[in-house]
Image (cartoon, rainbow, N blue to C red; front, top):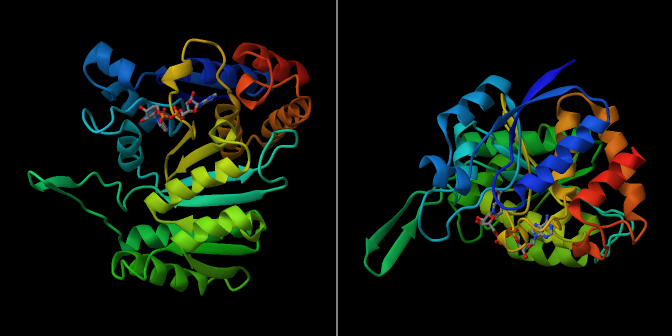
Length: 332
Ligand code: NAI
């Protein structure tokens, strides 16, 4: 079946890694029509808007998008487009699998867990104001509705992927109302999934436990900020952001993207590691019902990474982005 998917290259290294991903997906024989759209800082410079209406309409039409990283000005300028997209399309779950690859130098081997991050509220609602010249306030929003959705999603994922345990992380000892509501809702959802073990761990202890005993975890469900931080921590355990993919999933729409940013320091040098984007493409293929194509790419990538010569520079190899891409395709 030919499927149309919105494609956004984004900023910085986005063009290199998204082009690599498209070439590799096409090499599997899957038929996709790419509806190319623009977003990000470069789009803002061109058109005066970082997220043109046409891009929004394209995702509304196609329901699914594959995107590269978007540069967000720090501390000033327009609001994060990533957050705007997540809120507009109600992409309530940010799914970040943490899976080791043989051959990549990392703190741990054989890790396989998933961070399920609430993606629409928490401290990322963007409700901030100056109370006076010297005091700023950010509003943290936790709703029962969003907490129910994300906790249900985490348990359903555990069931689908035959994972035995869900760990909910929070700081309800201090934020008794907001995190307390998240925790209470998680406990309530857990009652409906007696076949899956449930535990809750305070987020600071969680960070330590993930570093010391990451194999204790299978599905981790967290409010927005904790999920953001812990999923990067997870990426650090398996070799860094360069190899961690993500999917933003809602009831009607999904956007797949690498976890890392636009890496302006290496943009245009053809040395970016495309693995995070490629694996986000693999998640997308599974989501659209193309598991065989997804497996082909995972296998080709896994085989290639076993050889230290056939890696990109950031993970100890010598290959450029395009050479690495061609090697994966040759392996497929
Ligand atoms: P970054 O992830 O772009 O870069 C951090 C470091 O990792 C840099 O040294 C970079 O060269 C390296 N790096 C990142 N991806 C790499 C790859 N694929 N291959 C090899 N090396 C890689 O984080 P930074 O510098 O904090 O952010 C840059 C911009 O990206 C910011 O404007 C930020 O807002 C944006 N960003 C966008 C995201 C998205 O669109 N989903 C996510 C994170 C950041």
